[in-house]
Length: 152
Image (cartoon, rainbow, N blue to C red; front, side):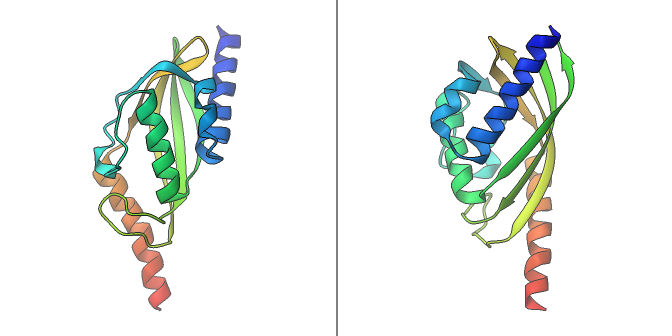
């Protein structure tokens, strides 16, 4: 099982590098199972692309990249069977309308956790464990501080 976990962790890091950070969305199928489903409620993001399956995740990633210029990093904190528990950092620049507010061009970073279950070495099920209101408040706090500093 340890070797399988190492392969899954390598898959996860490649997904982060190529798909999330480089935007090579055509490679999504290398890392995410075609029957993938997410249980994360991302409605607070107010994305045009919504969906909990493979196509929804593809479209959501594309839209987030356009609006937040994100850079993700993650580490596995523990395993429960085929499920990895992850600690994430999302650093981005707010360049598109999201979560109800217009682009500011300002940067932010937030931390959150998630879990991801693997099948045949690919992610098949996942859920981000984040509070949308708390996340929005933290992003706004960081952006507002930068805007205030800009005003002097």
